[in-house]
Length: 139
Image (cartoon, rainbow, N blue to C red):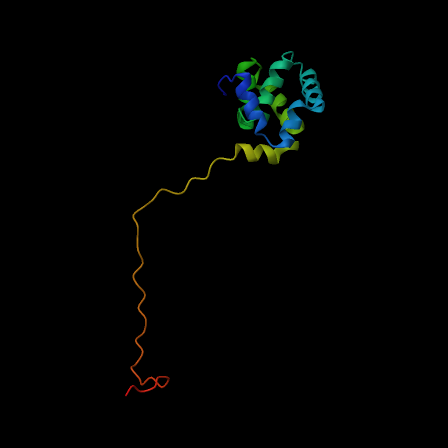
């Protein structure tokens, strides 16, 4: 679950988002979808659900933790939270999936360094000595 953020911190996060997510956060379509989904599932805490969905779009709450968060923080039954999360994922998060993957991408860490093994030096076959025909003799 995310820690509490001030408005200024959230605004700074918002300014760094890809355009697609910025648009989704303040989109009337997003708001209407959340409202319709909550109404269909008989959830009265629409603003709380919208707040958590906004956290996901801002990069504060992972989409994987969304269902658990609305279940615990809004006190929804597990099956209702699951259905609500599935619909919001389908209608809100899925259309901006590539942008969400971009902001939730885990940093790639190099594998731990093991003992350093150096390969043995390559042995070149020895050429038989022969007379250099390209050089002029020195007098």
